Amino acid sequence: MENVKQMSWFVKFLLLAAFSMMMLIVVSLIILMAYGGRYTAINAQLATIALQNVLIFMAPVFILALISRHTEQRPVAQTLWMTKGPSLKSIALVVLVYIVALPAMNWLVEWNQGLHLPQSMRSIESVLRDMEDTAQGVTSDMLMTKTWSGMLLRLLLIGVLTGVGEELFFRAGMLGSMHFSRVQRHVAVWTVAFIFSAIHMQFFGFVPRMLLGAWFGYVMLWCGEVWTPIIAHSLNNGLVVLFTFLANNHYIDGNVIETLGVPEQGEQPLLAMGSAFATVIIIWLFMRKKKTEI
Image (cartoon, rainbow, N blue to C red):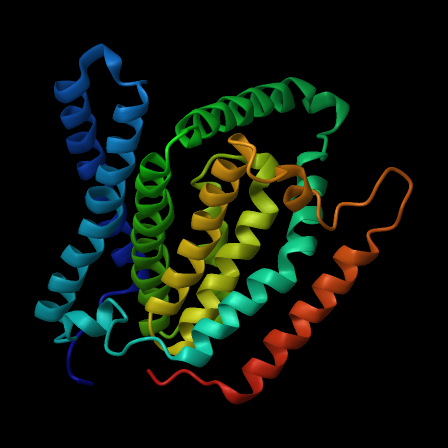
């Protein structure tokens, strides 16, 4: 294995980007031919999500894995971080962290949304907020459904399929490439987390999304497989879909969940601080016992 020439992580990044851009053109043509001028319809948006995850995110990573098998003699399953399955302990960890960290994440989301750029950059901030509002409007429209079958379809596409697609691309593809190139693990995790958040083009949700990306990255390296971050990502997205459906149809009060940990005006974020502290302790205890096996 030492005599096999390794591709640098930068070359692999370029390959992933090139394949993704090619697939983006393919997806755009498919949606245009299938829906024509109705590309903003909900069905077209849901179809775009499915094609985006399969072709733009998943396919490039599988192509890279095939190239790596030929050039580096690395098994496809190893490149995809699929040489083993998730453990029950790892799954329990991501579920526990999600529950415990919820108040802290809610407060962080609220804080990030309230950020303002300097006065000299207010015109840029206005553009960014318009982009944010547009993206939020599209997401809200896409999540709006009154039927359980519609909710399950969105749970599959936005929850599970997006979790699989994005984790394969950003964690197995990008982070995996940096890991195999011996890039320092913290540098690799946070670099990919930054890219993961930036590519969503939502500045006023950048920080919490970057933290999520870093969490998914560390989980993959600790567990030595991509299935656990896929489960963590799918859990995060899937519960958003479920809670939004339940709130929109008046089964629950959505504000209770969204504002959990967000203090009232003039109050200290004590619940959020306690949530953050407990989350750090849980992760630290797990880190002491878990090491990457790759």
